[in-house]
Length: 78
Image (tube, rainbow, N blue to C red; front, side):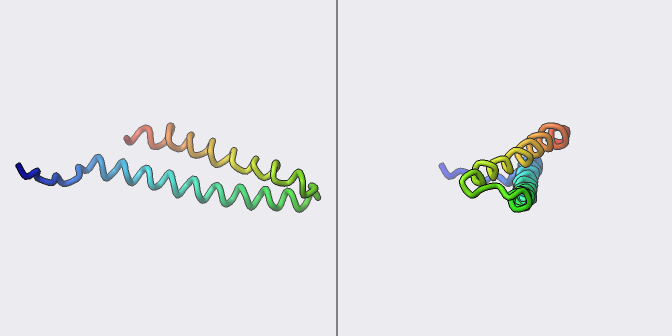
């Protein structure tokens, strides 16, 4: 039997839109955070062998902000 392709429901399209918004939000906050960490490393004259470890701190704010955005804001709409 041939299966009929169903048109995606409005809820599915909306959910995908929210998920894409979260991805873009994470990417933008990640870039801003990494830029801030680069400026911090440069201004504080952190040695080159320690700088990669400090650079990983830049992952923390976007992760926390994205989780908060997903749970608090988008949780109301999904």
